[in-house]
Image (cartoon, rainbow, N blue to C red; front, side, top):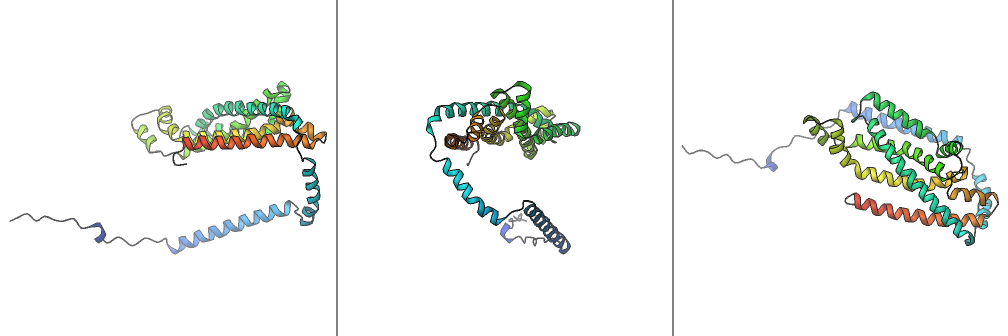
Amino acid sequence: MADVVTQPIPASRVASPPPSTPPMDSRRHRYAWYVGLGLLIGALYVWAWRGMEFSWSGLARSVPHAVDFVQRMVPPDWSVSGTALTALAETIQMALLGTTFGALLSLPLAVMAARNLSPRWLTWLARGALNVIRTVPSVVWGLFFVAAIGLGPFAGVLALSMYTVGYLGKFYFETFEAMDNAAAEALRTAGASKPQIFQYAIFPQALPLLVNYTIFILEYSIRAATILGVVGAGGVGYYFQVYLRNFDYQKAATLLVYLLVVVMLMDGLSGWIRRRLVPGR
């Protein structure tokens, strides 16, 4: 008797099971949760709105004063261009060094703070340290280092380094924890140690995001460095406070114009680097 060849049934003819729907109680619970969350968020905004003492009449009265302030800054006084460019160069140097030192310190702290890379006790210690560092504003770090080592850009570099550690450390360890664990589990099954897992599975995946966060902090550090100059930590902020105290608004406007150019150039450069590092951007 000839063998009977059984033909496979096409996938299109196989009856698929009906899509499962969540139980009615589950949908009601989820709906109630969203409603409660919406009410809580609404209450928070009402509380914030009442606390700020917003006044439409006060806003209307402020318009002439704002217009007068802007008019005093126009046209910019280009005679201070040499001073402005020198101060901006110092600001960029501070931001570059502060971000670099901060990123180098953030990486080991982030490894210690990541739950998938370190034991729980070390994670708590590292996250506690990052929270303490991040709690202190950049201006307070500037005052601290100015009091410790004196006036000048070196105090600004140290302040920016600490400020960078607080934020990049958090960005880094959250990136490590969000990576795909498939490669890490394969290496762990093969007997790899945690440093090897980090080196060959976690870090290569996370590198584009780490660079992206670092460039973002570098951009922000240029703006933060202008604030640090106000407390004597060097940079263009020193001249901002000098000109504004002396009511030299046109000179302060010149600093703002040059700072705007630097920020735009940094934005273009960072976008170019991101497109080279992240495929499809």
